[in-house]
Image 1 (cartoon, rainbow, N blue to C red):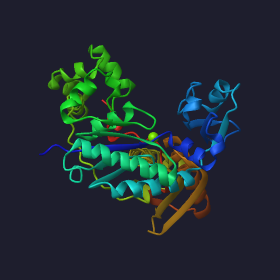
Image 2 (cartoon, rainbow, N blue to C red; image 1 turned 90 degrees about the vertical axis):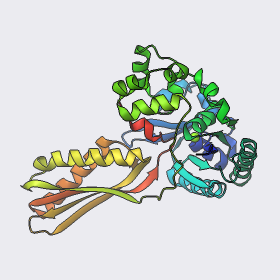
Image 3 (cartoon, rainbow, N blue to C red; image 1 turned 45 degrees about the vertical axis):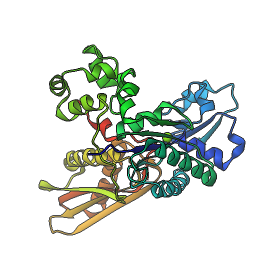
Image 4 (cartoon, rainbow, N blue to C red; image 1 turned 90 degrees about the horizontal axis):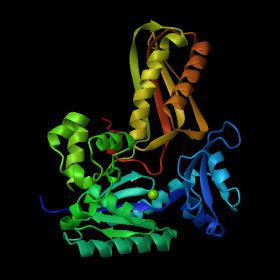
Length: 365
Ligand SMILES: [Mg+2]
């Protein structure tokens, strides 16, 4: 296989940057975009903050109350995430990016991979020029900055784009790839979270270069075949994952048949738990959160019933999905008084999550 030229484009501090574009007076102030839980004034978490806020220690995922403490003496602006607006901006940016790619893969609302091997004719300098054009077009049309990494595969391209932020452009040629990553800490490798890092540390492996020298068999027996092989290859600068076009799903659902017909919520609850667990894993691993939840039931007479609800705040946890589904199921059973043969859950009104992790983040040892 000839060397590929892969580009990873990551919009900088996306939600907060969108807010700065909408209101330029925010630009030099700390800006914190929050997802409120709807359970009391400051209950919820920081989704994204701009770099001014990050200088005060604000980070994604932090409770809003903590961010407010850190910023109490600053003229900070706290905003509720406007996911529909970010989605709209994202859609336009993705349409720009798609034009520049032989193959295009949208990973999340602010992240995409482009295979540009053919149009760059395998040349990394041509790819660098292409990346500059992309950055200019996004800046001119949307007034947004992004960071771009170019490398021989998706792993290197992602690490290159993470290397300089914001507004970075990092080109890593195939011959430089191993040198580029080998001195970095293992957790710079996409897919190495705290848990994997800890195990590697216990094995005496701190850098990617050290990981590359491990016996692949040993990594497989420690982490399983999939993650073990990935770690070994990625640490050696190798990754064959293709850039793949995906069709956007509009909903996810799962329905199961009960072992026997049932009538009471608490008897059906264990099925709901299992369905929600499976459904939530699928939805979140593809980078979505959702605003609507529905339950469907088929009765012992084979009649179908549904109940659904759309929420103001998107749901983004298994617990929230389970609790919404159980509530809908109780309502349905109370109103219809039926015996149930099959039960299912559906989520829709999907919204792309920002900063979605790669597939590898969902492989756990
Ligand atoms: Mg980003």
